[in-house]
Image (cartoon, one colour):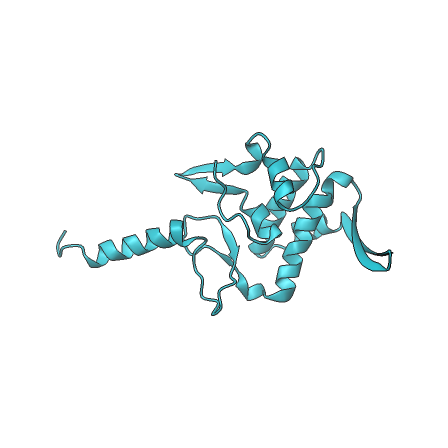
Length: 169
């Protein structure tokens, strides 16, 4: 199964691991090896027990994107970053009360980072039927669709058909 929007910032990529396809809810983490592949895509080691924390964090991220920060704050309270100096180089170590929560905490912290940088660039796809989110990196900040290949083309097709529909049909 192809997962949409691979390559988004980590937090939004986690949000987008569940989507609607032809009216049915699809969860990438239900696929065999889905969690492990997602962790590998983000340079994280396989973490036994990471599936449930990732799903809980995905739900908290969606809530935060919808304006409810409470669940995300609960996730963020489970861990922290510790500065370290190793061989004269600065290093940050992520710690969590339960190690399986480390990947989920990193994704939650990534949304906070995005909000700190350019919150206006975090957007939900303009297609009302689409549940995907993206980070607009376009030069003028006018991106509206999760993907031109999917939702953007659908919208253009609908507009074209409406303009070229015969009167009275």
